[in-house]
Image 1: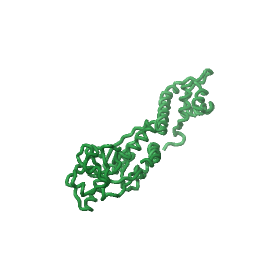
Image 2: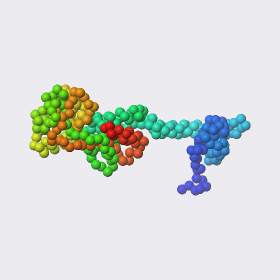
Image 3: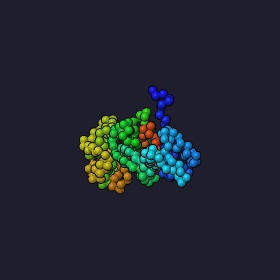
Image 4: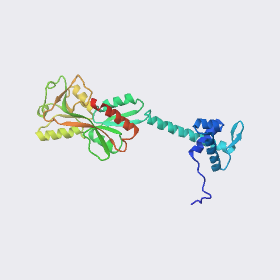
Length: 300
């Protein structure tokens, strides 16, 4: 261990700033004006830095300051250091003002996620959004491993580390092309849908789990099933007349070519949640997303 007698003296960032600005301005008074402090404060900080260095850094002249040899060598380093600190400060300020930043969002359907994102980017146009549609299982994994910042999920799994904020309620319906013979029905049964080609989301989705349970409960089966990777594919299949889709109501932007028909055996309502990790919810970017969401919950 070094003794007190030979322990090297430390410098402070205030000393470096005072020295650098004095060297740039060629004057203690002009440096003080730029830093918003007194001239004596700048002079004292420079004096302490000189004491730490063990050498004079300036030659004090009537017409201003002149760097010594040691001062010139130190200035080259300190000038870059002060510039770097300024860049860090500006970057932090940019993030705090939400002039920069990025949010990664996953969801099980385009709505209500896209409605919220649309409102958010109007308010914070410089924040970069990365969005992906995922299965229910993958959305929960993205929250657990923190590969996404936010998820919009129907009936998410309860985890102690996750914060879940309710958004809106929805229920399952049959999605049908408006030209389909069943499109004008006020209600359908699972038995009637068994005679159709049924389009369902991929394995790992909440829909697969719930529909499978309902079929078992009521003793029905779907002989012809097409599984899709995302809800957008399901919607396209319905529009092209491939079959009847089973999905949550209002999971996409309304279309004049798609009809929603309630299902007799599936009257239950389900809640969409905004999900995030508890140790991230106070971050400026995420809290701003929460604020925007809170302001439009009544619209969802």
